[in-house]
Length: 388
Image (cartoon, rainbow, N blue to C red):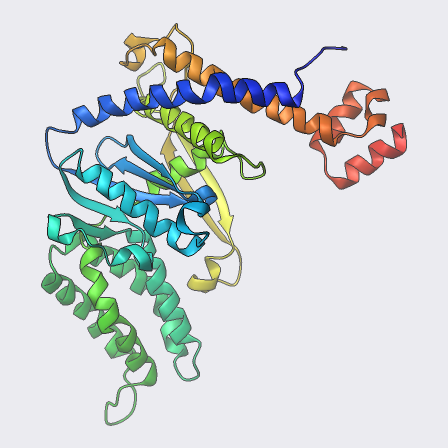
């Protein structure tokens, strides 16, 4: 179509001159409104990090709003990548404690942040329940690989499920131990062998894993039954604005991350989609996970099915249906910020295509061009043989 497009240098000049500062200013306005709303009572937050540029994110556990984003560059920790997560965690906690009443924080089980220094300030540190179950499954599977202890493996899935149940039902460590001993009694009857009722090696290995002092020291941090799964959802949402296949400078990456947070907070309270009869619309997702078979010991691929309610589509224009979504219209700043994000996103992909596409592709038909763009190596080879 012989349509012109901005050069690569013009694209970056427009991005750095007109997009970065307005995005940061509007994020501060949006964040200030959320912080003012959270002053009423003590809150529980979920804190986690994304490996790309070590982005440390904080989410309010009740409203699911993103309330803080901290991006740590490797140059800020003397190029020590191991210390980046601890630095991001320290900055986040120091800022939150000075702004809102915080009573509990939920993180993953990283060694550097597990031994926090904020307990003397009245902040309860809990760990993600999913990471605890995964850690227990790994330890039991390793014990079951030892010769003479393979009787543990058929019990692995039941033990992990019972651990979930105990953490959900138990209110304190004493109740957790009582719930755990009930499982031990059942396994003891199955694994006890010999005429003198000697303990089997499998049973003793199981006791050594579950009653390990180091493991029991971390169990109280799982009893509040918290999870950071919603925070992981936001980390996947960041990839819409800052894909891992592209390299960004720290200021540009920070602005794109803030755009992702603005988008997530703006559409966070969308109601579920309803039919004409007023019933919810659900989506059933079936997928197979191979690596779980390593821990749950199935010979074939594990097929998982989950059902979740479908939400209304996101709306970015001014004609926001407030009576349907029970939300207010987005401000002009939101519209301009999201429009800038979409422009940057599609322009960058188009520039990448122009720099990677071979010159002979312009002589092909439109269908051949689309096949080359979206196809694999075999399709590209066929296109080259037909047009090149």
